[in-house]
Structures are given as structure tokens and as C-alpha cells.
Length: 331
Image (cartoon, rainbow, N blue to C red):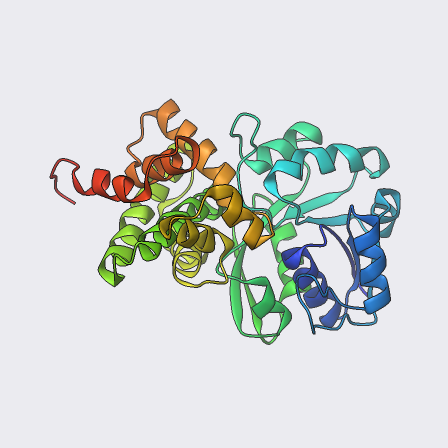
């Protein structure tokens, strides 16, 4: 019997993972909250808005009904934006059986207090609920186009991580497993903030040297916060840390980088967000990351300056000058 998996969130990443699972022989059910959009997906057999030209496999269905999702599979893969993560889990909980297993490809913190997403799962369900995060250097369009990709699946329950790895692994999609759910979560959230910073620098035409410095020192900031929250050093040097950071800081498929580019070129945040037309997770992540840095007394200067550009109307060039004016110290 074919394995079943339900995917919550019909944006680019949720759609890409649903296509991947279906191609791998699973029965996949993709849920979206917008009835009109889901109706179009069902009619067109593709997501023209986010992944035009990628036709759905026959074993990929779509729905707007959470009850149908819950009845379909005991494995949920959540791909909604971080601000909707807690809400969607609370909404679907009444329909779920006790043996539900929850994974997510959402990257970010809970905007209400800055908690990690696995903490939300434990709070809404229980600490014993099988939970896993999927993260790593992966653009949705490239996954949907079946281009080679490698990601990490982290869970405190290794058996669940292996189960997900088996569902998603293919000839062109390599899955690694980890038990460091905290490290993978922190890497996936903070790299979006740093991608905005790298985009700002490139929008200001500051060159490749600046970009490389931002990525390198940005990784240090991820490690500082990640270790404080309980992550493991090795995780930040792997796919879900350095790998994802490099990807989002250097390629214009990254919405966070594109937002930074627009800001560096003098556009306002509202205009830039409208042009991108999709969720830019780094905006909310900047606020939560900066708050966590202050809470724990962690030095995160790139994050701080990015936060001030986004939330205090600091001029992007001034933000760069502030970084360069910092006191000299050993690396």
C-alpha cells in the first residue's frame, strides 16, 4: 500500500514537497486555505502562481478541508508561514488522532514570544508527539524541477526522521537525518535575516568582499544564538546551517535576498514586499532574533543593524557604516 502524506500550505515550498512525495510513489494531499486558489490548482493540475509549468502527478490531490487532511494521513507536513504555524495546528488538532506525526518545512520563530516551532508542537499536542523539521539549502522551483538537492531532517525521534527521509528521498533529493532539532530550527530562521543583510550590501553595490564577510560573520551570529538555545556546533557547519546561509545570501531566488536588494537600491519596505508578492520570513525573524539576542545578551551586530533598517527606518548605508565602525577585536 502506498504511503500517505498530507501537506499543509499550497505555496511554492508546500507544493514542491507534495510533488516530490507524489513522484516518490506516495499518495499526497495538498491543503490550501484559499478556496479559489485551491480550485485553480485542481483545475490546472499545477500551481501556476508559484511553480508554473510543473504538472502535478496523478497521485497528488488538493483540498481546503482540514477534516479531510486529518483523515487522509497520520503524517502532517506543515509548510505555512511561521506566523500561521501555531494557528493552523490549533485549527486542525480537533480532527487529529492521538498518533499524529508532525513535520514542518517552515523556517522562523513564533512571532508571539519568539519560541521555537517544536515548542509550539509540544504545547498544542505533547512533548511525546513525533515532531521533525525539514531544512537545508533548497529552492522550491529547483526541487519541483527535479534538480539535485540535499536537505536535513531533524527529530528527537530518529525513527520518525528516517520515515520522513524514506518518503522524500529520491535519486535527485538526498535526505540526511539529525537529532539536533534546535540547531536546525535556529539555522533556518536566522539565515533569512542575514540574507536580507547580504541583499542590502549587494543593492548598495558594495562588492563580493562585503558579501563574503557578511556570510562569514553572519554564521558566527547563528552559532552564538544556536548554542545558547541548545543547538549543536556541528549542525551550523552543515546543510541546515552554512549550506542554507550560502544559498539564501547569494541567489536571487531567495525572497529575503531580493528584499535586501530592493532596500539597498532605495526602495521602501512596502514597495519591495509588494513586488516580491510572497512571504518574506526574514522580516519577522529579524524582530524575533534581535529580541532573543537582547534577552540573552548575545552580540549579533548584523542582525541588530538589519532589524534597525526594517523596524527603525535606519538608512541601509548607515547600517553598513555602523558595522564597519565597530571596535577592533580578534576574530
